[in-house]
Image (cartoon, rainbow, N blue to C red; front, side, top):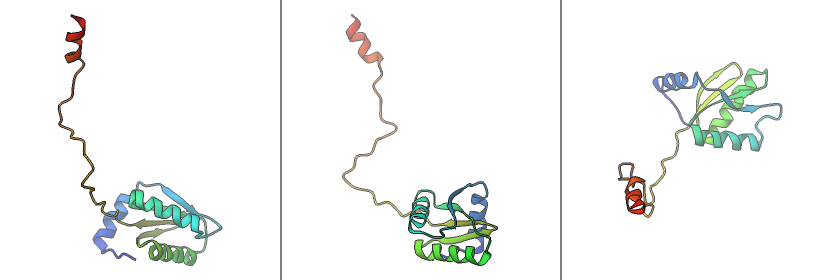
Length: 119
């Protein structure tokens, strides 16, 4: 499980404020498909909100702890029925054989071909 200091947690809470929940944990609890979906969402977004449809606070706390342990994530916030998790995206190693497109490369225009064909 990752740990955050208070400044990092405050910044992440501010970023998460405008987010909508991307995963819901219902009556089945933390089933394997739900954990896989949360893992995929963390990989794509880093910071996610999860809605828990359970009225027991202790159960929600145990879900948060379990998710953080299983997915190597950090708990950001637990407010009401919402859990906020953060996990940094893994660094992608650059493959040396792959060509990258240059944005500033000159582009051929249509005009250069019109003059020779129309004469």
